[in-house]
Image (cartoon, rainbow, N blue to C red):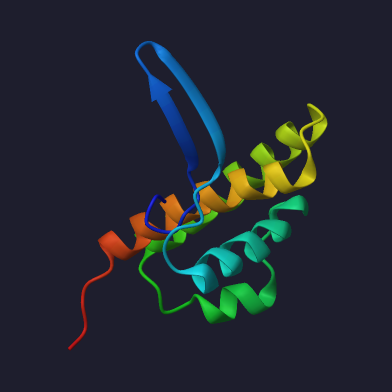
Length: 113
């Protein structure tokens, strides 16, 4: 998440900690793609026919992580939006958490030569 610049900057001195805007370090294109993907979580989670066809060859463990991401991020999007958070902040939070799910899938996927 930090490598993609999806974490807040921090200014701290002693016991005082102040967090600022996103750091925006790392790959800007990857960060943009995650932010754009975050918009899809405003819709309710479902497994449509195109998704099922596209993911039929994947291991069940990866499908389970994907479904967990779908349900959790949709719920989180709605919760943050309903508490009155600004829309860009909600999307950034979803993108940050989505990066964690992508990392988990990449960690469990065997390397191909």
